[in-house]
Image (cartoon, rainbow, N blue to C red; front, side, top):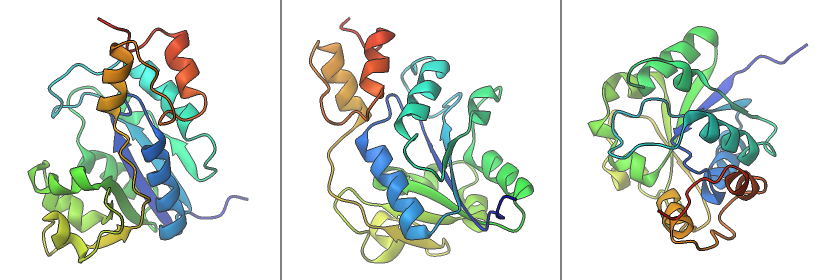
Length: 201
C-alpha cells in the first residue's frame, strides 16, 4: 500500500534542456524538505518566454531522463497537455485538490524568486505553498528578503552547491557546434544528439 503524500514539492521549468543544476536543485529539495514526492513540470505554453521553446515531447523526454535517478521525483506532463497559457497557480490548485492533506512546496531558483512578484496571482501562490528557494551563491541567507520576496510569503531556503550551469549557455554552445560537456545529465546529451536538437544555425 502506498504511503500518503504529506510533503509534496512542485518544480516547474522549460527544461530546455534540463541540466546538472536542475537535478541538484531537485535532490536538494527532496533531501532538505523531506519530500514524499517531487513533481517536475515541463512548461507548456510559457507566456513569459520571448523565444520559441523546443517541442514539448523532447523537453518531456529529456526531463524524464534527467530526473530518473531521483526516486521521489515524478515528471508530470499536465502543463504540456494544457491548452492556453500555463500558470503556476492553476497547477498548485490541482495538486492541492489531489493531495488535500499534503503540505505544498514550490521549488525555485534565485532568478525565479527575484521575479516572483511579477507572476500572475503570486499572492494566491504564496498562500497555497511554501517557497523553497535555492540561490546560485550558496544558502539563501536572510530569508526571502534576500531575493526581494514579499514578507507575507513562507520561505524555506535551500542550500545548493555553487554551479554556473544554465540552459541558455548550453544551447549557445551547442548552436556553435561545441560540446556542452559536464552540465548535461546522463542520457540527455545522447538524446540531444540522437534527435538533432540545438544544432548550429
